[in-house]
Amino acid sequence: MTVEKHHKARLFRLTLSSLVALSATVATAAAPKQPVLSFSSPVSGLAIERGSLWVSIAGDSLMLRLDARTGRRLARIEVHRADARAFGGGSLAAAGNRIWIAAPVHVVGDPTVGDASGWIGWIDRRTLRLKLVQVHRDRPARVAVGRSGVWVSGLRTLRRVDLVTGKVRRSFRASHYLGAVAVTRGSVWVAWSNTGRVLQLDPRTLKLRASILVGYSSAGSSLAVAGGRVWAGTDRGLVAIDSSSAKVVSRIPLPGAGNVAFDGSQLWALANGGVYSIRGRTATKRLALDPQAFGLLVAVGRDVWLSDEGTNSLRRVATR
Image (cartoon, rainbow, N blue to C red):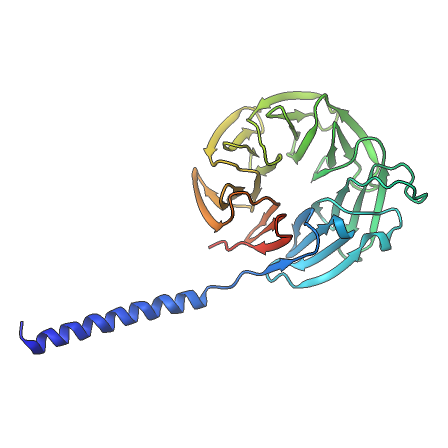
């Protein structure tokens, strides 16, 4: 090769490398920046409904309504100011025009609260008005909504709440602590904490139909309904229960899967080292985190949000 040809070839390679570098820079710059929000207290509940992200911050007795895409604040509700009986906050579930709250709060020495162990409330998404019913004995902690009603678990009690009045209609008492709740067309499912099992109950009679061994979860129980399956997060990974047969039909290895959510097309999980999206049996890490990160995960469509209790932060997870 002559000196002139060598120079031209070198110039071509340099030009090509520059174009590749420029393309990579442009692609990085074009990637949308995901919003990250910080609070003075940990997030205690998350729910997404019609483009709004609802956030409960129990330590501040506060509810926030945010834009699910940008994180921009749309409304702020101080629950104690809205109702003198309401302190704190808790887990959330959205259905129709209501955002349901299960608040495990016991206040001593306040006559407006009495000896209530907490409250079950709902916020009208149109008027932002709060209504609640006080609960006694076992504290309400986790909430889920379905056609059969609103279901609230706490300590050893599962309560069925009327969708219209918010009053407790029936209750189921267990021998061990109860955790996360999920609702399908013909059943209500509740994690049986410290046993590694999920219970299937008849929503009308509250009689036990099945007790399914899925495995332990050190990070706290989590359930998600995806089509005809109920998914549970466990220390070893995700476990799928067929909602018709109540049999385990799939296991996906993903150590430390403490939280699971379904966005309408794919599963999401908070596990050791990050947030993962799951298609089929393949888990793809979408966000790298500290191995000890712990929080809540919620997903609907392209909106996936994670709360981190270690940093009192809330961030949107990139879905692509």
